[in-house]
Image (cartoon, rainbow, N blue to C red; front, side, top):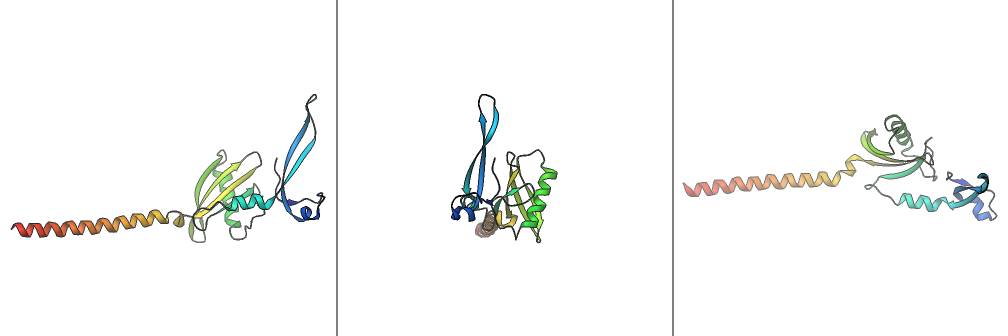
Length: 171
C-alpha cells in the first residue's frame, strides 16, 4: 500500500527528514501462522514520482494529476489553478462512473469546455485525472478540416471555370 506525500521524521539523515516522500508499506507475514508481524516501509522521494507524472502532456496546456478520493494531491502537485474544477470532476466521476475504472467526459469551466479523463487506482483509492481544453485537443483536426474545405471549394471553382471555358470553345 502506498502513502501520500509526507515528511518522514524517523529518517536517520537530516536531508531525508526534510524531504517529501511517498512510502510503500509491505506487510510481513509469519508463514507458519499466517499472522501479520509488522511492515516493511520503503520511502521514495516524491519528486521522482511527481516528475514522472508531470512529463505526461496532453495538448499544450493539459495537465495530469494524481488525487486521493478526497481531492488532495498524492504527489504535492500544485492544484491552485484547477482545484475547483478537479473537485467537481471527482464528484461527477463518483456520480456517473461509479463502476467504471476509467473514462472521459466534458466539463464546463471558465467559459470553455474541458475534457477530463480518468483512471481509478482501486488498490489505493486514488484517481489519475487528466484535463485539457477541448478546443486545444481538436485544434489540429479542426485546422485540417478547414484546409480541406478551402481546397475543395477552390478545386470546385477551378472545375466550374474549366467547364465554362471548354463549353465556350465548343459553341
